[in-house]
Structure formats: structure tokens, C-alpha cells
Amino acid sequence: MGNGPGFVDVGALIRGARNAARLTQKALGALCGYSASAISRIESNQMRLDYSVAVRLAGVLGIPLDRLTHSSVPDARQIATVTIWPSDEEDAVRRRELLTGALAAGATAVMGAGPAAAATPDVQAAGLDDVLFHLPAAEPMAPARLAEQAAAARHAFRAARYTDLGHALPGLLATAEATREVSSGLARQQASGVLARAYVLAAELASKQHSDAAWVAADRALSAARASNMPVVIGEASRVLAITMRRSGQCSSAVHLLTREAADLDAGKHRTGAVRTTLLLTAAYSAATGGDRSTALGLLDQAQEDVERLPEVPGLFTVEATRAQVDIYRIGVHNALGTPDEGVKVAVAVDISQMATAERKARAWTDTARMWHALGNGPQTFAALRHVEREAPQEVRRPALRALTSSLLYGPARVQGVREFAIRTGALVA
Image (cartoon, rainbow, N blue to C red):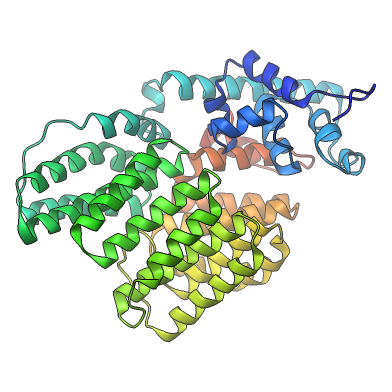
């Protein structure tokens, strides 16, 4: 960037607004759906803002959008013509409202939540950091009882009851660890399988909240899975580790891990074939996130062939291998590739109501909301967000969903009902 008369130091502008709101880089990243390191690069002008990132940061920090877009978007003049806020007075009011929300949300992220916020899922994910390094004391448990506890935790995840899951995980992890330590032979392998799946759930929960605990949980999940010698469990653990890698920007490494593990699974058997399909889907999305269109679409087509050849397999641990799941991943892949228009036909045809779990339905509606938002369709974006709330009220409080809600609330077009929705879901404090 140059230093001419119109020069705006975007990094300094964002840093100043963040400090004024008393937000750490980690807290701001959580509100916007980014890592602390990404915020650091933005503030030091080492990472160029694209328009969608600018919208999120402007919404959370109360910075007029044109202050960011004039310096961060190549065709800023065209964008500015559709992002001018209605009036100076309304601009000030909306920014004050947003700053209030950012301050409250930031305080929660930095210092922890009070009693009223204790039921939100982000509190539970934040607590995983301590839990993973200091598991509570626990006694070994009979294998059948341990399997029941793991099944209950899995049910909480699939139902998108993340608070219940956050409460259950410390005891489950500790008990599974203790049980494995006193077991040997086949019993030890079985306990390792339960432990791996408990860590898979921990990684899933932490990933949803953009918590660094996801790295620790995913690594332990794969280690325990390999000790179990169960191909399905190894595949499940590989998937969450790859998701963590992708979120840190290691997209090509994630694709390599996933395709390698998929190649080791028997495509002809129902359960291993189904897990293989989920690995291919996650690899497709990881490739798309890294900008590799041909690999992403090729992996999607491969997964599609798998589900058409084999019967649908319900009851996988966290993700179903079904035709609808492939369709939803196709929408997400096109979102990541920057071609959301190519996902519209798929989104119109897929029946999300037929998906097996509340968590997967909510994720499907989230990808649909992102598609419509990228296409500039506010009413359709909001309709999809309302579906997320109906399917899984805790899902819509995730940082990424709150950021999407903020973008809709403080975007150029008004959508009726968004402000009330933002207050209800924690994106805005009344």
C-alpha cells in the first residue's frame, strides 16, 4: 500500500478499534471466525483483506465498512457505492450498538462467562484447554458401561447439545483413560477405541468454537485410534485431525492425510466404505479451501460414486455417508472456491429435513446461508439462519454463525427480523 493522501493504514485502524473494545486478538478472531494469528497478520498488514473479511471486521469493531474497503479491495470504488450506510446519525447509532455487543462478547471470550451465559457452547469449548492437560481423577469402568457413556456423549453431539457434551467430556475422557490403563489385550484395544471417539468429540466441539484445544484433542484421538487397531475409528480420528490442519491453513497436508487414510479403507464393505466416503468429502472441502478446484471436484465426484454404489450407512460416529451429505459438501466446496452460484441448483434440490441428525441439518443450513450471503441475498441468508436456529439453537451461537449474523445485520441492506435474531443468538447485546 502507498502513503498518498487517501492512504489508510488498515492494520492500525483495526488494531486501534480492537484495543478500544478491549478485545484480545484471540477474542476478536473468535467473534469473526478467524485465528489469533490471522488477526495478527491483518493488523501488521501482512494479510490482504478480501471483502467478506472486511465486512466481518467492520461489523464486530464498528468501523465504517468503506474505511476498510477503500484500502483493502482492488475495486473499492464500486464496492463503496453499495456499502454506504443510510445516514451519519443512523451510522453512529448502529456502530454504538455493535460496539456494545463486541465489548460484551469480548469480555466473555477473555474473562469467561457469567451465570447467564454459562449455557452457551463456547464456554464449554474454552474449558477444554485446561481439561485436556489436567483430566479429573477417575476410576476404571466396565467396558459395557463405558460404551454407554460414550454413546450418550455422541448423542449429545449429534443433537447439537454442546453444553451437555461439554459437561460430559471431562469425565468420559478421564474414565476412558483410566480404563485403558488397567486393560490389556482385546479389552485395551476396545478401551482405546472408546477413548479415541471421546477425543474425536472433544476435537469436534473445540473446532466449532475455533479453540486451539482442537489440535490436542485431534492428535490424541488419532493416537488412541491407532492403538485400537480399528480401521473405522482410525478414519474418524484422521478426519478431525485433518479438519484442525485445514483450519490452521495446512490445506494440502490435510488433503494428503485424508486421501492416504481413505486409500487404506476397504471401499467394498459398508462401514469402512462409508467412512472412506466421509474422508473424501472432508478432503474435497479442504482442497477447495486451499483453492484447488480440480482436486476438490474430483474428490467430490469420487465420493458421489461411492454413495451411489453402496447402500447408505446410518449410524457413523459424527457424519453420515449419504447422497444428501454429498450434496451439502458440494455446496460448501463451491462456497470455498468462490463459486457459490454453482451451488444454488444443488441447494434447491436437496432435502435437508431428511438428514439424520440436528447437527448435520444445522451444518447444511449453515452452508446454505453462506451461499446466499456470498450471492448478496439477505432474505435467503436470514431464512437459512432461522433454520439453523430451529434445528440446533446452540449451533447458531457459534462464533462463525454470530459473525455471519453480524455481517447480515450491518450490511448494506436491511432484512426484517435480523436485529431481534442477533440479540437472541448472542451476535448483538441489546
